[in-house]
Image (tube, rainbow, N blue to C red; front, side):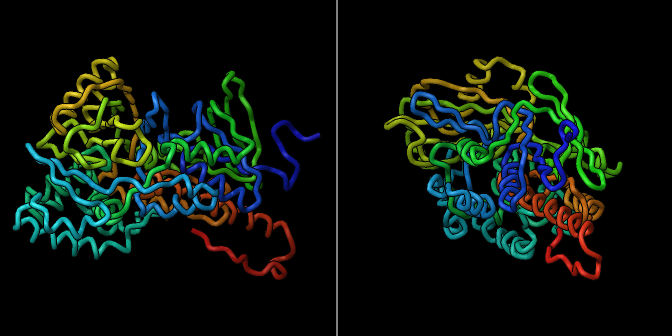
Length: 472
């Protein structure tokens, strides 16, 4: 008889821990390569921060909301899964708030239109040439797969760079505002590499959206898998020479021990540090130090669109409202997001106020954030409903020096024979495409390790030849 949880030789599955975009990408690539895949998800649903609900004809994205056209890995996977028709072109106008006014630019032609905009003074526009030149120098290093290749430039914060190379106007309305809108934190708290990644990858492209909301993507992809265990708390992942052992607890508190051929661990960095037993002390400590920003946000249904705001998103600098990162106007974001004639907004907070707001009642949060939204957009139409979201983990706050440390982490962990691989949005600037790229890379590395193991169990080294595989 086969030991409980153990599979016959050659039949052992590859486990994926986590069902966010990283875990699902890894699972897809592993299954595509012919492996039997089991997915363990700690929560009650798949998708992680990709979560959509529906209310009164509104499509409500509770967290991640947009797909920039630069998200090539995610878009390619969507197409391979037969879901390309689910993506639709989104709004193209971005609002840039300043005290008492909002300037509008077309995101698909941002770098063409920005020089004509009165948003910045003539002197600031001339100084922006320095930023463009610097971004061109770093452009080839702005990788979704591994941003540690830009580690040599990770020597100062984005705010320090702004003070050294630009002026206060650019510092607040371009550099700090970009960091706020993408990461929900301040330019003095993140690496300058983070700014250049956003500047070259996120801004200046077309925005796409899933027709049925961001949460529909993981749900549709997960439906292709037969073996997904929800409410499964993984306690330990231990690598052995010929297999991987996983210990996990199900929704009823029953503990299971499973044996696998390999495993991709696609969970937040600090969680991976606690469950992957084979990490050395330095790498474990690095993962524990990865810091995630938080946000509290509201989704609100309006009786009509706010007057005179054509943007799908308004970026909010500190001088306009220090608590907010931005406001998304759902009715301008993509077709079919709200019922005919209605309006919808999503307002997101910065990390620090979010930590204080999270403990308050929903009604208090809703009133507070609606008031702040009116400071940005002006008076709102009648509010029909409000939903409050608390997200303790949103994106990685890449402190100055983070990507240099990440390079050292990679140097320590890159081995050709590891059956356990890590995946997540902490290997580059934190977003769904980075997570997707990391999942694909982890799946490739597991396949490579299993290929080496199979080769070592086969004919003599002379007969085997050289495996035709590229390794990270």
